Image (cartoon, rainbow, N blue to C red; front, side):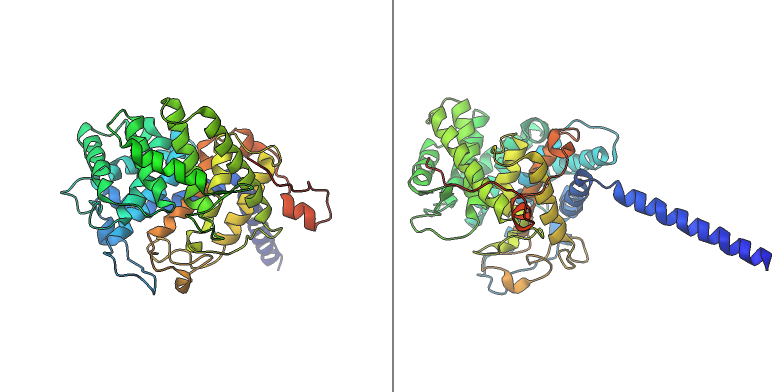
Amino acid sequence: MKRTFLIFLFLGLLFSCGFAQKRKQKETINDRDYWANLAYTIADPVLSNISRDELVKNMPVELSPTWDGRRTRVVYMEAFGRLMAGIAPWFNLPDDDTPEGKQRHHLRELALKSYAHAVNPNSNDYLQWDKEGQALVDAAYIANSFLRAPKQLWEPLDEVTKARYIEEFKKLRWVDPPYTNWLLFSAMVETFLLSIDEQYDAYRIHSAIRKIEEWYIGDGWYADGEQFAFDYYNSFVIQPMYVEILEVLVQKKRMVKPEVLEIAKKRMQRYAIILERFISPEGTFPVFGRSMTYRLGVFQPLSLLALREELPSEITEGQTRNALTAVIKRMFSVEGNFNAQGFLQLGFAGHQPDLADWYTNNGSLYLTSLVFLPLGLPANHSFWVSPPQDWTSKKAWNGQPFPRDKSVKY
């Protein structure tokens, strides 16, 4: 009897210690660890496959129920380009021996191999650079990834691979972009060529700048064409690409004055304030407009400003990180975001294929990686180590003081 009691006591203590250890481990998963682990989870299936020249072979294709009939090879270019635009700044950090550092190093090595396969006509994973105008869209995200991490992603490429990208980018001039956000895709590709001192088409950049300025409707919002549509294309494309294009032009002293860039940044800051206020106390945000399957790409402007240390004075780093973390956790706690092979599935929170638009496939969904831009900040940066603070809606609905909102005139 005494021996039995001692055995049970020992087992109880063992279980208690194990539970305490697991709880302690859980508590040590800070916001940055969570972001990095999720970014790795999203990126690894794409990069591990294309780096082995096996993405086409192993990535299941999932198309919108209303798919328009285009060639399905667009899937792989969308997945690769959009993913790289989101995680590129992360690779700007130096290697280290932390778990995150090892993840980052691994993905960067895979990415460099992947870039080479993507433009090698002899590779199975040679991307569809022609035949479909869609190639312009995702070439722009690839070009954007090079702009966001030139020393880590562009400069290490071999000369043959670089020459192939330059050729593919220039060949895309056959695409006549509609007068929508697509003008920025042309401009982004040409701006990257300018950034590496290659021949570029100034008219395609000028056209985009003129139209974007014409389409500014006030209080931080641009229309996507002549008619305003209430959706998140200011997030997915317009605000970030416009600012990043202008930055290169100002740096190269071409076409635009610095004050044009400053105004565009102020508009994006105002729009970021609105995005932060969209986040509910529960970590949700309004679902409206097309392309909601792009998930967390909605917050690209807020994430980009955090990365650039240019958040508006109205919102702190602590509340921005806390709000974004709440949204990320809320969305990815839902089952069904990933398929059995680890690739993203059609949907918003979980698997919701009927939500997909006629142009959407499972490669399109990797635009969600654009929320991870702040991973380009070091782990000891104030964005990551500032105490978490309640965001605006959480303050408002909990009876705390919160700042009144006001429109701007830029």
